[in-house]
Length: 140
Picture 1 (spheres, rainbow, N blue to C red):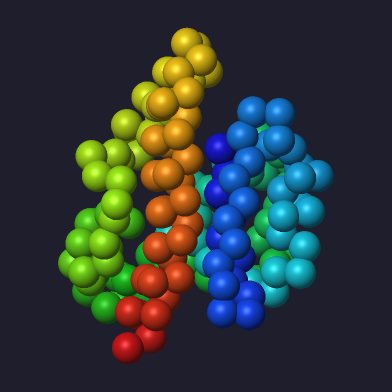
Picture 2 (cartoon, rainbow, N blue to C red):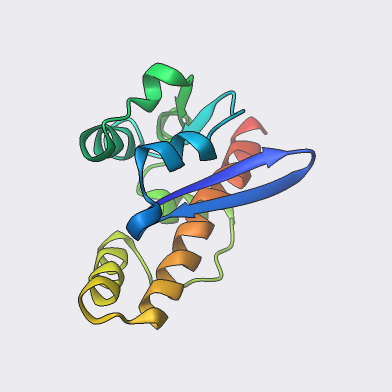
């Protein structure tokens, strides 16, 4: 699964690609018009994963900014959820972390568990959407 949050005209639009929709072409279409890519630990995880599985080097096509390093410079360490908690960024989907996200994906893929998929989509949506809140907090 790959999630993208696109900010424009004061609104946030989410794109979530998975199963048959997670293709190089669909991801490129989703990012059309984007001028910069923000991630959290994307330099070490997301971008290499996408390059390996989709053959798409996003860092070569878009300027990339990994917010994790900004957090480190500000003395904020840990995964995205830990940093969000330190900064008071709320989450509606509780009890899900990276490990649980993988388990939810497996339950959906292996057993067709649509409840697991819905929870995974909600978790992913918050992950990418909260990057905007993180950027704003770090600017202060």
